[in-house]
Length: 495
Image (cartoon, rainbow, N blue to C red; front, side, top):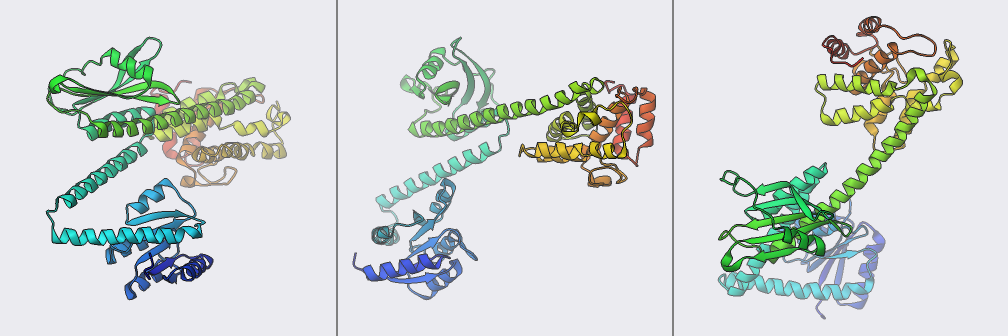
């Protein structure tokens, strides 16, 4: 194409702007106007006749995506090409949905510019002609068909976005299976859907979750799933779509796989006369099951790593306790007391899980304390006591290296802080101390008092309870003490 086009290049890098201008103006008839951000580019577009725009995705003041939206609102016939040095599927989808006609990855190959301009200007010409044609003949059959296809594509994108948003809410494998089954019913409008776990050795299946379109109907039990269908899908590892003669129902079965091994099968049904599945349904179900399988595999790997990591760290605690027979099982008992208190004060499931880890590992820092101090049968000197006081910090640092237990790290560091501010290591006071640390503090001290130690015999429960009561409002959170004493009186603490 030999036309002379006015082209805007928006980029916060001067070198890129100058390169575009020098190359295009020296090799073509085009005029290049440059802008350092979206605001400057938009001002140029509003004051001059512009044929197309190249814009960086990330710019100050107004980025490329915002600029594209402004251009579309001002003149939807101006094509926009986005450039970015950090391409991703999310960026691509987001930009293409907002009027962008092309997406170039930096560094842009300079010899691509002229062919890109020629192509998008041809497409622009066609687009403008289509607009004129639609205005002149709204009932034109071709335009109606194009519009219908566009609407269908939009609907498919919306469906995929819905799938991704729903799966983002999953926190457990059970959530994933439930979301998968319900979504499969919603996107295909089938009568019922069932997710079953397949036992390859027994060649059998067990339904673990189901969806029924007619939630208030008279369905008493799920439609039976033919074992031959399950076996065929499991053996071949590919989806199966069957339609009965004369519209007599329809069934679709899609495998869920980790690597290449089938571990579950999603089966959907239309009862006779209610409808049938098509290739679009098969495409969406494949997308659904692949996404679910990926999430299940990642979750399983994460849970395995998580459990192994906890086992290793708890082995350190057991090593410490094994050195000193007087403190054996101390962490386990402290965890039991802490869980009873947490349940009584209404902690959430997430808080209880955090407290469980923190209580089990609260003394892990003692692994950094010399045995001559840790196991000393006599009273500690001031210097030795200062060394012992370092164990919350050491334990917090150990947990900090894990990188995913931020809350647990804080609780372990604070479990020897006092309500009156005279604790250690940071002398926090009152509600400056995390709530779960305040629970752990009461549980830890009580078990220490009623346990034998190398330097003293254990105290009776009555004496220990009196010390806890005396520490109410000074060493301990009054609310936690009240709950703890109430639980003890009710016999809900295993001592």
